[in-house]
Length: 331
Ligand code: ASP
Image 1 (cartoon, protein in one colour):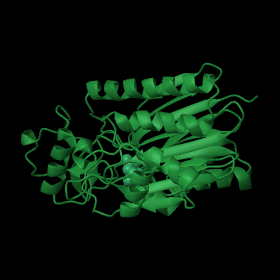
Image 2: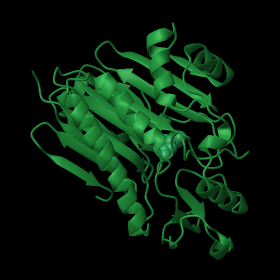
Image 3: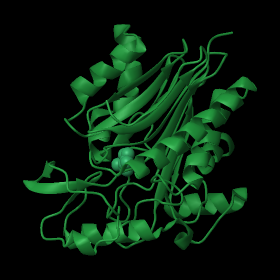
Image 4: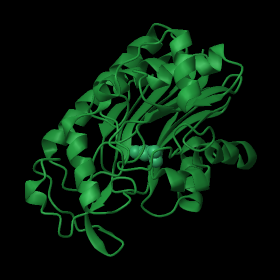
């Protein structure tokens, strides 16, 4: 038997001035989800079952951008996406454009297990969900007051919001109910000061006691995204990847992650260059990722965990069988 390891994330790119209550709330949820995964691993659940279980839990809580609490499209609706990959046989499933499926990661699992395909989107994915009998809810269920305010802010800025940043010039932030207490940061985007929207996409990577690696990622995408936009999270090889060597889940600006095929590149560097996990992660962040754009969590079949990001912060937690456990936001 090998050693198990688990890592979770709740998004890269955190406002350096994010109020400490918000940070603590997010850390509490990550700790809870880590503990859920640890208990499942101790009861010998397989890696693929554990990543689904943990991501479902993250989707259910509105704190992060997945399931309830998802980022909104420019139309004020929610279009969710998710993917899951079982490294043992490189099986995978992905979904995009979901508007009524309560737990997108579980539909991705069903695509993998119960369909002849690896990726279903929009009306076809919804139809598959109905046929599979998964829990469906109205789109309103996913929309939180906080996100409605955040979308308003993004629209007032008349900006396509890349990842977590919204220009603050002339926005009258004092009237904005979003992220109460958050302050302007000194970061810039397109020459404008920005403030940063905190928690984002969620993901989980696991290696179980049999050395089986699995990864899952789930998201509402970017705030004020175009309807129909697909990010990295459902794209196998970009936001999510697992094989016999490792499992990886990414977060950050989807377009940059897609360009860098980040998740698969970590596995490729391990496979072709023989790098150990953390070195592979560092290499890919350095060589393939534009500055300030994203981050990732990873585990190896040897029971190692690794984290890498080049954003201001990344909500994440990890634990290994030897008793190590950490939940952190900053470097
Ligand atoms: N990567 C996600 C996307 O671009 C966003 C995130 O990680 O928060 O859809």
